[in-house]
Each structure stands twice: as structure tokens, then as C-alpha cells.
Length: 596
Image (cartoon, rainbow, N blue to C red; front, side, top):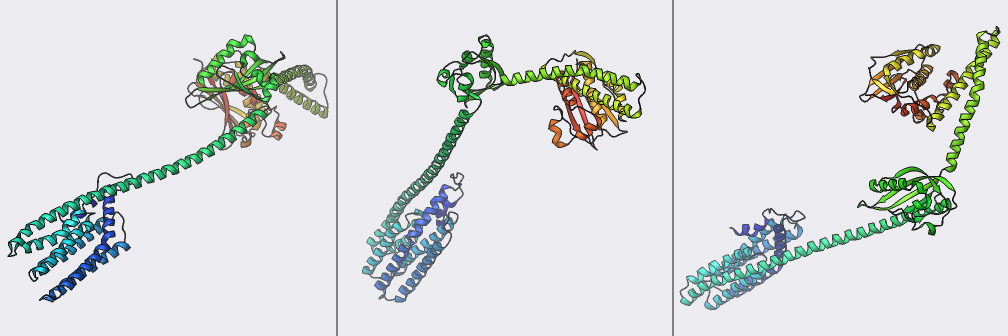
């Protein structure tokens, strides 16, 4: 192995890499190069001093020009070394350039050793015995000084010493004096010992470099850990502040909430209650805390059902909303409360507590009952005399009581038309109230839906002709049965067909389709009307929902038809909706489950 190859051996790629993707040998090589170049100015200064001393001591020999020639070569090599050091200081000293700088330093070391080898080979034969002693001392000094100079890389020291030892040993070995020849045997031995010392120093340097890198890495990790710890402490402080702020807001919200809020443990015992709960139930917080709320506030006869519902909620970890329950106040008065129970579950899946909210709906239920009674009573009271009025007007308009002039005939026709419209409104209100109260009887029977579609078209043909609109079946009607109330399906079809007729232009065709959609049959009513505004989509199936009041006043309508259709279809297990048609118009559809 050559000296430069041995010196740059550590620069070869390594398979294993550090965490920063830089191989460790390259780091060590960079450290060795830095160490060598840091000592280089002292070596150059020592070389100049010894060269000057040698020239001064040997200037009087017979062939003095040899001394000056040798010193010129030594000065040139020293100047080249100084130029190398200057270039190193001003250039890239990174890890990637370490091998290049090591090769340059190795060449300089060999050249420096060659200077002293020339001193031994050129002058040994020309000098006296006293001058021989000077040469031996000079060479011994540069060999010993080289150990300190090149200890960071023992191959460099070996390459530096070889040009010195070989010529010097040869000169001693060829001397006439036997004692001098004996000394020639000791010189290589001393050289080998010096290389061994340099090798040992090199190992110490490498160990120091590795320790230094480990310390730097540990220090960097410690600094990064401190930064992360400081960041986490800051984030923890911010999170704590946010949690405290959220806790204060939540506590303030619960305290000021008009809804009764109770925190219960998994056994149903009250842990905390807000002022609204104290006011609603008539108990102080100290009287509720620690006691079973169910046994205290709820009727005893409902205890088993409530306990079962409570266990189901704890098992499923799902909220229970809403739950209307008769509740007993402290004074014994019973009220109806709408309860909602929300279990709070920790990351391990354990229920920490249950948040119970209660709202008194007694007055609301009473108001709804009174409203329904009022609507039902008023509708019945209005329908009886209104039926008589319509019958009388029909007799008058038919000419049964005598002929009327044209003006009177027009007035009675308007009265009959508006009376009929009012009767339709009353009937729709009664139907809607019955549906919402759960009192509308349904006679569910299995029957073909295609027959009901054809029957509805026949029943409403006259209504379509009134608006100059024709109803038509499009496509084949699949043969399948549904379990429905015949009268209510016809009522839904009548509402959809009448709406389509009223909002379609004169001469238009309202298409009716029946589609088999697997488990359901879909009936579609397709018109070519003006469509439904986007802002009205969410309210189309609400009570008294009318997108265009001017058209409704002109062509009639109560705004209850679609609301009744939605509730009737849902009572029969189906669903209803609408879609915009390409080219204008709307498709209203409803689906009913097939009957196996």
C-alpha cells in the first residue's frame, strides 16, 4: 500500500452511516487533517530553523556549493508546504475535501523527509567525524520531532521517516569503521520503535476524536431534547390555559343555562347540579348531590324500565335523546320533562360520568293539546255549516230554485268555488292533525300498485282537463304488490297530480312512471312547470309551503297537500322526494316497499 493510499484509506465509502448520513471514518479523517494542518506552521518554522543552522555549520566544507544547493531545495519544499497550508486555510475544509487535503499533506511529508535524507546521503562522505556527529544529532532531532508532528496519522510518519532512515543507514553500513557499521544496524530498529510510538499516539488521537464526536452528538441531542422539552412545556402551558378557559366557560355556561344540568356517576347518583336544576325540581344542590336521581325524581312504577334504559346507555356509550318522562318535584307536583343523557367516556372506554339535561315541556305539551283540540273542534264546527252552504249554492247554480241573471250567477259560482276551497282546507287540516297525533286509521292491504296508478289517473282526468293538461303513463308498469292503504295512496296521487296540473302550461302532458327499484317501487309524476326555487327546497314538504303565492291564489291550493303526502307515505313505510327535470319542470316521486 502506498503512503497516500494509506493516509486516505479512511476516505473510502463506508456501508454504515450515522444518524446524520455521514460515515464515521470520514469524520475521523477530517479531524486528523485538521490536527495535522494545525501543527504545520510549527513544523515549517522548525524546518527553516534547522536548515539555517545546518547551512551555518557546514558552510566551510570543501564543496560548499553542495550545501547551498541542498538548502535551496529545502527552502523550495518548505515554501511549497507553506503554500499548501495557506490554501487549506482559505479553501473548503469540509468532510468531502478531507481526502484531497490528506493526499497533499502526505506528499509534503515525503518531500520534507527527503530533505533530511539528502542531508545524510550528500554530506556524510564529505564531513569529518565531528561534523558526522552534528548530522546524527540533526537527523535524530527531526525523527523525534516528526513523531509529534505526524502523530495524528502514523502512515504519514512512516513515509516521512523512510527517506531519512534509508540513506542514513546505507551511509553507515558502507563506512570503513566496524563500530559505525554496527550503528547502522540500530538505526532501522530505532525507526521501527518510532513508528510504533507514532502508531500508539495515532490510536490515542483517534480515541480522542471519537470521544469528541460522541460528546458533540450527545450535546446536540441534549440541546434538541431541551428545545423539545421547552416547546412541550410551552404547549402544555398553552393547553392548560385553554383547558382552564374552557372549563371556566363550561362552568359559566352550565351555571347560567336555563336548562337543568346534572352530572351523574355510573350508578345514577348526582355529583353536581346547576341552579336551573334546583329551580326546576325544588331541591337544593346539597340535597341532590350524592343521591340517586332516578329514585328521587322519577315515578317508582317506571323504575324497572328506566334502569334497563340506563344499563343500555352505559353499555353502548351512546347518548339518549330525547326522552320524555314524568318527573316528580319536591312539592309532589308532577311535570313532564324532556331528558337527554350523554355519557362522558375516557380514552380507555370507561364511562367517567353522565351529563343529564332536563327541560320542562309540560306547558308545551298542554299548548299542543289545546291547539289540536281547538283545530279539531273548529274544523268540525266549520265543516258542518260549510257543507250546507256549498249544497245550497250548488242548488242555486244548478237552476233548481229558478234562473238567475248573469251577474248573480257569477257571484254564486265564486261563492261556491271559494266555499269548496275552504272545505278542502278544513279537510286537509283535520287529516294533518290526525296524522301527527297518530290517530289516522290505516287499512293496510296487499294490492298491485300499477292498478292504483291507473285508477288515480282516471279519477283525476277531469281535474286535468279543467287546466287543459293531460295525464299519461310513460313506459311499462311493472307488476308488483305493495301493502298500503288504498284510499291514502289515491289521496297522495291526487295531491301530486293536482299540483302538476296546476303548475303545468296549457296543453302540456304530465307523465306518470312506475319503476321497480329492487326492494321498492317508485311512482314519479313529471311536470313541465316553472320548477321550484332553490331557496324553497328545504321547506317544500312543510305546512302551508307555497313557492309562488300569486299562482296559488290564482289556481287554488292550501299549501298542506305535500305535507300530508309526506306523512302518509312515511306511515306506509315509504319515502317521498323531488328532482329537477332537464329542460325545466319538476319530478315528484314516492317509494313504497314491495310486499313479498
